[in-house]
Length: 125
Length: 172
Image 1 (cartoon, chains in turn yellow, orange):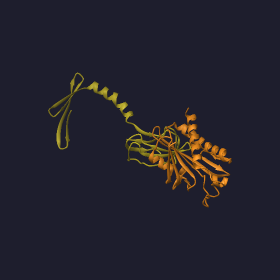
Image 2 (tube, rainbow over the protein chains, first blue to last red):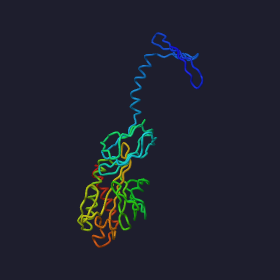
Image 3 (spheres, rainbow over the protein chains, first blue to last red):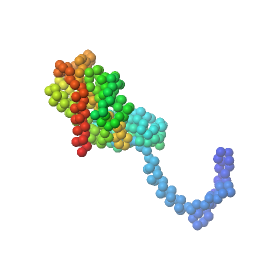
Image 4 (cartoon, rainbow over the protein chains, first blue to last red):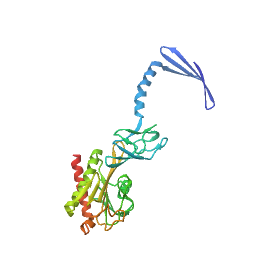
Protein backbone atom coordinates (compact mmCIF):
# COMPACT_ATOMS: atom_id res chain seq x y z
CA UNK A 1 0.00 0.00 0.00
CA UNK A 2 1.45 3.33 -1.02
CA UNK A 3 0.28 6.54 0.71
CA UNK A 4 1.34 10.12 0.33
CA UNK A 5 0.85 12.65 3.21
CA UNK A 6 1.38 16.36 3.30
CA UNK A 7 2.12 17.64 6.83
CA UNK A 8 2.91 21.35 7.33
CA UNK A 9 3.83 21.70 3.66
CA UNK A 10 6.24 18.75 3.69
CA UNK A 11 5.42 15.63 1.70
CA UNK A 12 5.87 12.13 3.10
CA UNK A 13 5.87 8.91 1.11
CA UNK A 14 4.63 6.00 3.20
CA UNK A 15 4.71 2.42 2.05
CA UNK A 16 3.11 -0.35 4.15
CA UNK A 17 4.28 -3.87 3.40
CA UNK A 18 3.68 -7.28 4.86
CA UNK A 19 7.04 -8.95 5.12
CA UNK A 20 5.90 -12.44 6.02
CA UNK A 21 6.61 -13.99 9.48
CA UNK A 22 3.66 -11.94 10.80
CA UNK A 23 5.57 -8.68 10.49
CA UNK A 24 4.60 -5.35 8.93
CA UNK A 25 7.12 -2.94 7.46
CA UNK A 26 6.23 0.75 7.29
CA UNK A 27 8.58 2.73 5.11
CA UNK A 28 8.50 6.51 5.65
CA UNK A 29 10.77 8.19 3.13
CA UNK A 30 14.06 6.35 3.57
CA UNK A 31 13.32 5.10 7.10
CA UNK A 32 11.98 1.61 7.83
CA UNK A 33 9.80 0.72 10.83
CA UNK A 34 9.09 -2.94 11.44
CA UNK A 35 6.18 -4.05 13.66
CA UNK A 36 5.07 -7.41 14.88
CA UNK A 37 1.40 -7.51 13.84
CA UNK A 38 0.03 -9.90 16.49
CA UNK A 39 1.84 -8.28 19.38
CA UNK A 40 0.49 -4.82 18.50
CA UNK A 41 -3.06 -6.06 18.25
CA UNK A 42 -2.98 -7.63 21.71
CA UNK A 43 -1.30 -4.67 23.33
CA UNK A 44 -3.94 -2.26 22.00
CA UNK A 45 -6.75 -4.50 23.18
CA UNK A 46 -5.21 -4.82 26.61
CA UNK A 47 -4.66 -1.14 27.18
CA UNK A 48 -7.69 0.45 25.55
CA UNK A 49 -10.37 -0.78 28.00
CA UNK A 50 -8.86 0.08 31.34
CA UNK A 51 -7.74 3.41 29.90
CA UNK A 52 -11.24 4.38 28.88
CA UNK A 53 -12.58 3.65 32.39
CA UNK A 54 -9.73 5.42 34.03
CA UNK A 55 -10.38 8.60 32.12
CA UNK A 56 -14.13 8.57 32.57
CA UNK A 57 -14.80 11.66 34.63
CA UNK A 58 -18.26 11.99 36.07
CA UNK A 59 -19.62 14.13 38.86
CA UNK A 60 -22.08 12.13 40.92
CA UNK A 61 -24.19 13.14 43.88
CA UNK A 62 -23.25 11.36 47.10
CA UNK A 63 -26.81 11.91 48.40
CA UNK A 64 -30.40 12.09 47.17
CA UNK A 65 -32.07 15.48 46.95
CA UNK A 66 -33.34 18.28 44.74
CA UNK A 67 -31.15 20.41 42.50
CA UNK A 68 -31.62 24.00 43.61
CA UNK A 69 -29.02 25.74 41.45
CA UNK A 70 -26.58 24.91 38.64
CA UNK A 71 -23.52 27.11 38.22
CA UNK A 72 -21.94 25.57 35.11
CA UNK A 73 -22.91 24.63 31.56
CA UNK A 74 -21.82 22.45 28.66
CA UNK A 75 -18.46 23.50 27.29
CA UNK A 76 -17.24 25.16 30.51
CA UNK A 77 -13.75 24.35 31.73
CA UNK A 78 -13.91 23.53 35.41
CA UNK A 79 -11.19 23.39 38.02
CA UNK A 80 -10.77 20.97 40.87
CA UNK A 81 -12.72 22.30 43.86
CA UNK A 82 -14.99 24.52 41.75
CA UNK A 83 -18.60 24.98 42.87
CA UNK A 84 -20.91 23.17 40.42
CA UNK A 85 -24.33 22.54 41.88
CA UNK A 86 -26.46 23.33 44.94
CA UNK A 87 -28.47 20.41 46.18
CA UNK A 88 -31.12 20.59 48.91
CA UNK A 89 -30.97 17.23 50.54
CA UNK A 90 -31.65 15.42 53.74
CA UNK A 91 -32.69 18.68 55.45
CA UNK A 92 -29.36 20.23 54.57
CA UNK A 93 -28.02 22.52 51.88
CA UNK A 94 -25.17 20.97 49.93
CA UNK A 95 -22.66 22.51 47.60
CA UNK A 96 -21.28 19.95 45.14
CA UNK A 97 -17.76 20.73 44.01
CA UNK A 98 -15.61 19.09 41.35
CA UNK A 99 -13.07 16.43 42.16
CA UNK A 100 -11.66 16.83 38.65
CA UNK A 101 -10.42 19.39 36.21
CA UNK A 102 -11.74 19.38 32.65
CA UNK A 103 -14.28 20.44 30.07
CA UNK A 104 -17.96 19.74 30.61
CA UNK A 105 -19.34 17.38 27.98
CA UNK A 106 -22.85 17.33 29.38
CA UNK A 107 -24.92 18.55 32.32
CA UNK A 108 -27.50 15.82 32.90
CA UNK A 109 -29.73 17.59 35.40
CA UNK A 110 -31.99 20.64 35.55
CA UNK A 111 -33.01 23.02 38.33
CA UNK A 112 -35.68 21.56 40.67
CA UNK A 113 -34.96 18.03 39.43
CA UNK A 114 -34.93 15.28 42.04
CA UNK A 115 -31.85 13.07 42.00
CA UNK A 116 -30.95 9.82 43.67
CA UNK A 117 -27.79 8.91 45.55
CA UNK A 118 -24.89 8.11 43.15
CA UNK A 119 -26.74 9.58 40.16
CA UNK A 120 -24.47 11.21 37.57
CA UNK A 121 -24.95 14.98 37.39
CA UNK A 122 -22.20 16.08 35.03
CA UNK A 123 -19.99 14.28 32.50
CA UNK A 124 -16.58 15.65 31.63
CA UNK A 125 -14.71 15.09 28.38
CA UNK B 1 -13.79 26.59 72.65
CA UNK B 2 -12.38 28.86 69.93
CA UNK B 3 -14.87 31.67 69.33
CA UNK B 4 -14.22 34.23 66.60
CA UNK B 5 -16.35 37.25 67.46
CA UNK B 6 -17.59 39.80 64.95
CA UNK B 7 -19.72 42.90 65.35
CA UNK B 8 -21.47 42.76 61.99
CA UNK B 9 -21.18 40.18 59.20
CA UNK B 10 -23.17 39.31 56.10
CA UNK B 11 -23.84 35.92 57.64
CA UNK B 12 -21.81 33.78 60.03
CA UNK B 13 -22.18 30.74 57.74
CA UNK B 14 -21.12 32.64 54.63
CA UNK B 15 -18.05 33.84 56.53
CA UNK B 16 -17.33 30.33 57.81
CA UNK B 17 -17.38 28.98 54.24
CA UNK B 18 -14.98 31.70 53.19
CA UNK B 19 -12.55 31.44 56.12
CA UNK B 20 -12.79 27.67 56.66
CA UNK B 21 -11.55 27.82 60.27
CA UNK B 22 -10.54 24.84 62.40
CA UNK B 23 -13.04 22.16 63.30
CA UNK B 24 -15.22 23.03 66.30
CA UNK B 25 -14.36 26.71 66.14
CA UNK B 26 -17.29 29.10 66.28
CA UNK B 27 -18.03 32.19 64.21
CA UNK B 28 -20.18 34.48 66.33
CA UNK B 29 -21.73 37.77 65.25
CA UNK B 30 -23.70 40.45 67.07
CA UNK B 31 -25.55 41.28 63.91
CA UNK B 32 -26.06 39.75 60.44
CA UNK B 33 -26.87 41.80 57.37
CA UNK B 34 -28.05 38.84 55.31
CA UNK B 35 -28.69 35.98 57.67
CA UNK B 36 -30.37 33.11 55.86
CA UNK B 37 -32.23 29.87 56.42
CA UNK B 38 -33.19 27.00 54.18
CA UNK B 39 -34.06 27.68 50.55
CA UNK B 40 -32.56 31.15 50.73
CA UNK B 41 -35.14 32.41 53.21
CA UNK B 42 -33.99 35.44 55.18
CA UNK B 43 -33.25 35.40 58.88
CA UNK B 44 -33.95 38.67 60.66
CA UNK B 45 -30.72 39.24 62.61
CA UNK B 46 -30.61 42.51 64.56
CA UNK B 47 -28.40 43.20 67.59
CA UNK B 48 -29.43 41.26 70.67
CA UNK B 49 -29.94 37.90 68.97
CA UNK B 50 -27.55 34.98 69.03
CA UNK B 51 -26.08 34.15 65.62
CA UNK B 52 -23.32 31.64 65.23
CA UNK B 53 -21.88 28.94 63.00
CA UNK B 54 -20.11 25.83 64.20
CA UNK B 55 -17.41 24.21 62.04
CA UNK B 56 -18.22 20.50 62.17
CA UNK B 57 -15.69 17.71 61.77
CA UNK B 58 -15.76 15.72 58.53
CA UNK B 59 -18.47 13.15 59.15
CA UNK B 60 -20.62 10.69 57.27
CA UNK B 61 -23.46 12.46 55.46
CA UNK B 62 -26.02 10.28 57.30
CA UNK B 63 -24.56 11.32 60.65
CA UNK B 64 -24.78 14.98 59.67
CA UNK B 65 -28.44 14.58 58.84
CA UNK B 66 -29.14 12.96 62.20
CA UNK B 67 -27.18 15.70 63.93
CA UNK B 68 -29.18 18.43 62.12
CA UNK B 69 -32.45 17.03 63.39
CA UNK B 70 -31.09 16.46 66.91
CA UNK B 71 -29.66 19.99 67.04
CA UNK B 72 -33.21 21.40 67.10
CA UNK B 73 -33.99 19.13 70.07
CA UNK B 74 -30.80 20.19 71.83
CA UNK B 75 -31.66 23.89 71.47
CA UNK B 76 -35.28 23.29 72.51
CA UNK B 77 -34.15 21.34 75.59
CA UNK B 78 -31.74 24.10 76.64
CA UNK B 79 -34.55 26.69 76.38
CA UNK B 80 -36.92 24.48 78.38
CA UNK B 81 -34.41 23.60 81.10
CA UNK B 82 -32.95 27.05 81.58
CA UNK B 83 -35.97 29.28 81.09
CA UNK B 84 -38.90 26.94 81.66
CA UNK B 85 -40.47 27.86 78.32
CA UNK B 86 -42.52 25.33 76.36
CA UNK B 87 -40.91 24.82 72.96
CA UNK B 88 -42.08 23.07 69.82
CA UNK B 89 -39.97 21.79 66.98
CA UNK B 90 -41.02 22.07 63.39
CA UNK B 91 -38.90 19.41 61.77
CA UNK B 92 -36.29 19.45 60.63
CA UNK B 93 -34.86 22.68 61.91
CA UNK B 94 -37.11 25.33 63.38
CA UNK B 95 -37.90 25.99 67.04
CA UNK B 96 -41.14 27.65 68.13
CA UNK B 97 -42.57 29.14 71.32
CA UNK B 98 -46.31 29.89 71.41
CA UNK B 99 -46.53 29.15 67.67
CA UNK B 100 -43.93 31.79 66.91
CA UNK B 101 -40.50 31.07 65.56
CA UNK B 102 -37.66 31.59 68.01
CA UNK B 103 -34.78 29.73 66.39
CA UNK B 104 -33.56 28.03 63.26
CA UNK B 105 -30.77 25.67 62.25
CA UNK B 106 -29.16 25.17 58.87
CA UNK B 107 -26.48 22.61 58.11
CA UNK B 108 -24.46 23.16 54.97
CA UNK B 109 -21.99 20.76 53.41
CA UNK B 110 -19.39 21.03 50.70
CA UNK B 111 -19.23 17.70 48.93
CA UNK B 112 -17.02 16.05 46.37
CA UNK B 113 -17.21 12.31 46.33
CA UNK B 114 -17.01 12.66 50.09
CA UNK B 115 -17.84 15.34 52.66
CA UNK B 116 -15.14 18.02 52.47
CA UNK B 117 -16.48 20.68 54.83
CA UNK B 118 -19.54 21.01 57.05
CA UNK B 119 -20.99 23.80 59.09
CA UNK B 120 -24.05 24.30 61.23
CA UNK B 121 -25.51 27.77 61.45
CA UNK B 122 -27.82 28.58 64.34
CA UNK B 123 -29.93 31.68 64.77
CA UNK B 124 -31.72 32.24 68.07
CA UNK B 125 -33.94 35.18 68.86
CA UNK B 126 -32.68 35.82 72.37
CA UNK B 127 -32.58 39.50 73.40
CA UNK B 128 -34.62 40.99 70.59
CA UNK B 129 -37.08 43.59 71.93
CA UNK B 130 -39.32 44.00 68.95
CA UNK B 131 -39.93 42.53 65.50
CA UNK B 132 -40.97 44.45 62.41
CA UNK B 133 -44.68 44.42 61.50
CA UNK B 134 -44.41 41.60 58.95
CA UNK B 135 -42.72 39.33 61.49
CA UNK B 136 -44.37 40.20 64.84
CA UNK B 137 -47.09 37.58 64.47
CA UNK B 138 -44.77 34.80 63.37
CA UNK B 139 -41.58 35.44 65.37
CA UNK B 140 -40.76 35.86 69.04
CA UNK B 141 -37.71 36.12 71.28
CA UNK B 142 -36.73 34.75 74.66
CA UNK B 143 -36.72 38.31 76.02
CA UNK B 144 -40.28 38.93 74.81
CA UNK B 145 -41.47 35.64 76.30
CA UNK B 146 -39.60 35.99 79.61
CA UNK B 147 -39.72 39.74 80.08
CA UNK B 148 -36.00 39.79 80.85
CA UNK B 149 -32.59 39.53 79.20
CA UNK B 150 -30.79 36.21 78.81
CA UNK B 151 -27.06 35.46 78.65
CA UNK B 152 -26.12 34.80 75.02
CA UNK B 153 -22.65 33.44 75.81
CA UNK B 154 -24.00 30.86 78.25
CA UNK B 155 -26.61 29.65 75.76
CA UNK B 156 -23.97 29.45 73.03
CA UNK B 157 -21.68 27.34 75.19
CA UNK B 158 -24.47 24.96 76.18
CA UNK B 159 -25.64 24.50 72.59
CA UNK B 160 -22.13 23.82 71.27
CA UNK B 161 -21.37 21.37 74.12
CA UNK B 162 -24.66 19.59 73.43
CA UNK B 163 -23.95 19.28 69.71
CA UNK B 164 -20.39 18.07 70.30
CA UNK B 165 -21.57 15.41 72.68
CA UNK B 166 -24.37 14.35 70.36
CA UNK B 167 -22.12 13.96 67.32
CA UNK B 168 -19.75 11.83 69.38
CA UNK B 169 -22.66 9.53 70.29
CA UNK B 170 -23.97 9.38 66.70
CA UNK B 171 -20.55 8.64 65.18
CA UNK B 172 -19.75 5.85 67.65
